[in-house]
Length: 178
Image (tube, rainbow, N blue to C red):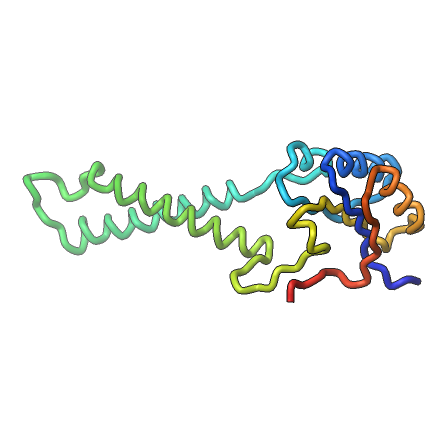
């Protein structure tokens, strides 16, 4: 058994890369991931990437933030230290709205950042790991898991037919910048 973990097809044109994805999918070869230096319209649908659930996390964190500040304001201004300001009632809802709104946005924003870092393992200070260093510069890379049942020569041939400039066999999972 070979030590190759990934077969990388490097393309210099996004249209050729999309054609390479189609070739691999026609032959039922699973694609591990695609790396591009810029966003490509429609690639998520072609690869079958599920829609992000960050919106649900934002909603939950926003509800948490709104509940926390509303509870703090209610306890502080109604129970702990009620003040009579201009004859208004202690529990005047319009006074609570700006603080509740701001804390809802604050909790949602920070919660989404932490959730994104946790989901993608992109914590600050962590060394970036990429398949090919040129994928962030000028190349479009299709990574195919080489542990499948398809012979490596067939995958290489399909990538070259699609217009791959270079086809590499990676033995390590990632290339580090260090």
